[in-house]
Image (cartoon, rainbow, N blue to C red; front, side, top):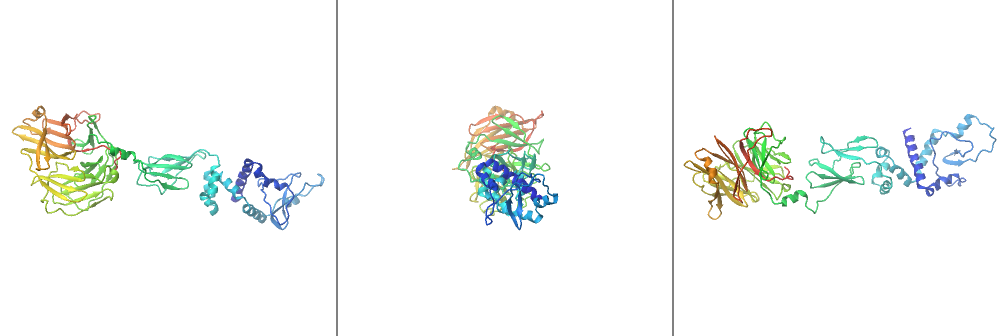
Amino acid sequence: MEELTMLRQLIGQVQELLQLYGSSHLQPHTQLLQPPPPPQQHSCCFINLDDKSAEDGCYSYIMRAGKPGTFKMLEPSSKSPSAKRSRKEKNRGRLPDASSSTEMMDQIWKEFPEDLFEAVIARLPIATFFRFRLVCTKWNSLLTSHSFSQQCTQVPQAQPWFYTITHENVNTGAMYDPSLKKWHHPTIPALPTKLIVLPVASAGGLVCFLDIGHRSFYVCNPLTRSFKELPARSVKVWSQQCTQVPQAQPWFYTITHENVNTGAMYDPSLKKWHHPTIPALPTKLIVLPVASAGGLVCFLDIGHRSFYVCNPLTRSFKELPARSVKVWSRAAVGMTLNGESTSLGYKILWVGCDGEYEIYESIKNSWTRPGSMPSNVSLPLYLNFRSQAVSIGGTLYFMRSDPDGIVSYDMDTGVWKQFVIPNPLHLSDHTLAECGGRILLVGLLTKNAATCVCIWELQKMTLLWKEVDRMPNIWCLEFYGKHVRMTCLGNKGLLMLSLRSRQMNRLVTYDISSREWLKVPGCVLPRGRKRQWIACGTAFHPCLTASA
């Protein structure tokens, strides 16, 4: 019964098609009215299965005796209208038996024109076509048939479908069929699952996808799952263009004493504080910013066990795998890029006072131990943990004491070096800084009751510190007679200094290039009035395309 229903639907489509094609396609049908062909030839006819009655004045078709599948045309009856036949005789000539009906259907499908067959299938609704694919292998192979593709192009386009992405499942799509008012949920295994890809364009039944990082294009047919990843573009994408823009002043990501689990970002160009929320950061642990590179900030929990990398602007977040070496003591951390942007990956180095160190590579997503500390580096390393590492090129610089100086590590060659550089007298709370490839030192210079912030530059020939600038005297008068502590919150061209005592809490910035000192407005939470006390922080260059 189901086959008969499908056949009726198919033949109905054929009749509509014959009416559309005109007389050239009607010729085989009109030949049915001609005299019957010789016995050795075979003819094809179409039967209306819905017709259950026949008029006496019309032509009718009956099966030839002993020859199922062929037909004979009868002329109008010459008997008078008053002549009557019994109902049993009428039904005997009109209705074939079950076996004859099956043979008749087989003969129809066998001699059905291939082009008309594909033309009818192409005009079926999409959902119906995919159900018909299950009938046989031949129907299932229509998707790859060139002639069937040409037939589909001649069919007038119906209402478009809609391919959508939901907030709950950004890596899977949902298709809406407006004709049936029904949602479909396709699965496209070839689409990347680790990236968020969004539909951006469509044409001819294909949908174009672009990943959220604006790097890769994909083209797919959601119905057939035909998929293709496009080659890399010859024109640099927006993220690559961003790397060619000269970096402006860095921003500062800081942690306050009042809210150790939330950060505060300062934009020096607008002189404005921002209060981002990073839901992925753990709330039960205190995590501190310890390094940055390419718009990413590296965090380390206060227990020195877990590392996290995050873009504070886009909230791109990643928890690094566990280290192979268990470290319970403090560690100095540095971060570098493999190229000009995070698209080529980044590396993170931690080193402890006992000389243990490891390197994390984002491309491999793993920690490695390149080797042991060379003999020319004095152990133990009395590292200055108040000073963040300085990155120049692919080399990281750490400040140490006993002996005073700098320890460097080249990320490309894996070579450690030690430089013994005596510190200036009466120096305290000092930290390294860099600007344009120059290594600088910033610290408090205290003598008697006077305290001042001074800037020194390292002389490469003599390996000595030379004073190049200091805070204006009128500002330093505020420190007179007070026990002032200083924390450097950023050391990348623009310094942010937190100066505090029992009676004072000041934030100032110093531009190394222009030698300009500026006061920073107090950090106040939204809808709050109380100023926040800055505990620690790091400088980072904001980048919208940096991905953890």
